[in-house]
Image 1 (cartoon, rainbow, N blue to C red):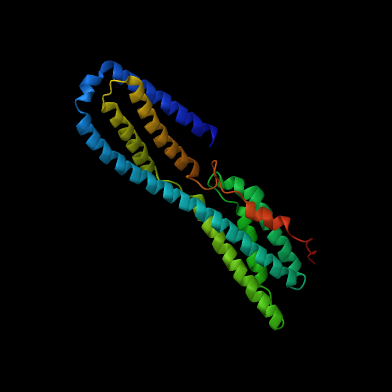
Image 2: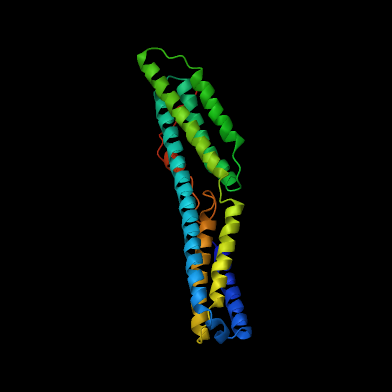
Length: 255
C-alpha cells in the first residue's frame, strides 16, 4: 500500500474518532440509546446495500486489472512469435523485422510504460507497429515454405496489433467519478449511522466505530490503488516484455 493510502486511513480514523467524541459529549448516550432498535434496523439495511456496492466495485477493478495483465502477456507472446518467424525469413527482411521487434519491446518498456501511468501512449511505439506491417505486407513469398512463414507473420502481427489496442484502451479505464461519489457518500452515511447508537461505555462505542471505519476506508483505498492498472501499488509491470528481451539470441544484421 502506498504512503498516501496509509495517510488517508490514519487521517480518516483520527477524524472519525474526534467526531464520535464530540457527539458523545454533546448528545449523551441515554438520548441516543432510546433509538437503538430503530437505528439498528435501518443500519442493517444501509450496511448490506453499501457492502454490495463495495463488492461490485472491487470485483470490477480486479477484473480490469487482470485483463490488463493478460493483454500485456498476450501482446508480448505475439511479439515473440513474430520475432521467431522473422528468424526464418530470408534477408534483408528477416533481419530488419528482428530488429524492429526488439525496438518495439524496448520502446514499450522504457518509453510507453511511464507514459501509460499518465494515461498516454507512445507515438514511437505506434510507428514501429506501422513499420512492421509495411515490411511484412510488402514481402513476396517464394515457395510453399516462405508462404507459410508469411502467413504466420501476418497472423502474429494482427494479433499483436489487437493486443496493443486492448492495452491502450485500458489506459483510459478507471472508476467513474459518479461511482466514486456513491462510494464516498455511502461510506459517510454508513459510518455516520454508528454515531446514532448509544452505549454507556464510551471506549467500546468508539472502538466499534473505528473498526468499522477502518474496514470501509481500507476497502476504498484498495479500490483506489487498483483503480488504474498501470499505476499505483498493484500496477501491471512490463514483465512480459522483459522476459522476451532476456531470452533472445544475438540478432542478425539487416542488409
